[in-house]
Length: 56
Image 1 (cartoon, rainbow, N blue to C red):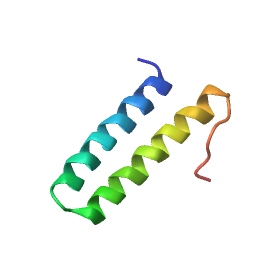
Image 2 (image 1 turned 180 degrees about the vertical axis):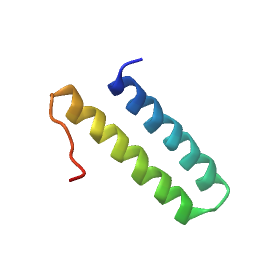
Image 3 (image 1 turned 120 degrees about the vertical axis):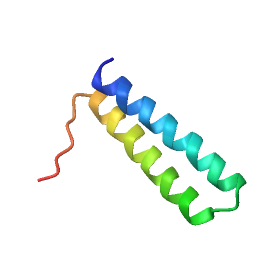
């Protein structure tokens, strides 16, 4: 699997986790997982346009 596919798979995993946490009433953890799901999805979108993110 390529890097973009891995990022999207990770985003989906985090979003599924967020839904479970939300259903359990753990709102803070659900928000955190949702944040990271969006982060990985955004990183994949940037990668699809050949824009690399930097942690420098």
